[in-house]
Length: 73
Length: 73
DNA sequence: TGATTAAGTCAAGGATGCTTTACAATGAAA
DNA sequence: TTTCATTGTAAAGCATCCTTGACTTAATCA
Image 1 (spheres, rainbow over the protein chains, first blue to last red):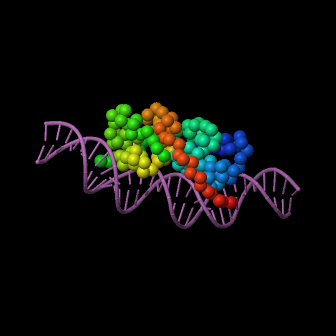
Image 2: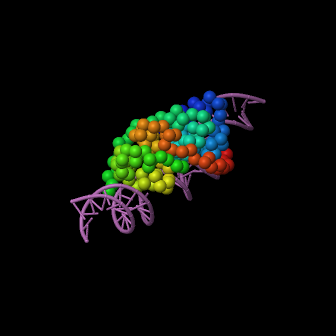
Image 3: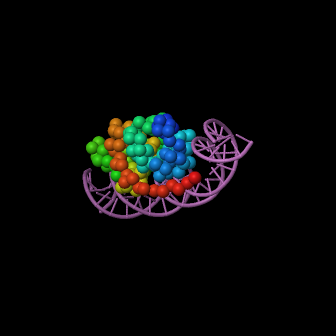
């Protein structure tokens, strides 16, 4: 799942550490998000959207709709 | 973090199992989301938004902006 | 009454998100 | 050249998300 974090951060001339502090997470978390190591939790996604004053959909790209099976009950 | 899952599901007369199957997750996951046990991952939130043809922000309520500390570096 | 469906819950385990500490590589600037 | 800021990465650990399997309760209905 891609995101526009690095661009949004560059537009504001913020370091990863700056953004991390503004969001209340560690710098490594920002780095992991930007380098695609993993996706943020939904609460963190909301924080990011609020900080940049954008909708979550404007920052994070829809995933490829992995077709999984949950054969239960 | 509250959500409108139960209402959206009721509007369509779907069971939790129906919704789970449509999303490719287990029924217990839907139940947990509706009963506030935890929040969905961002990818699952996107799937839910796509299914109901709504923005994530229209389904999930912003959290209370817990002020946490990340004293790192 | 007995069968079925829907919803709620629990336990155990695997997968993912996030932390701290630490170190390496790069580029800019003195 | 040395220093400094920034970025990338790794390991270990804890928290959260999601799974399967199983059980309970309530409502509906033949």
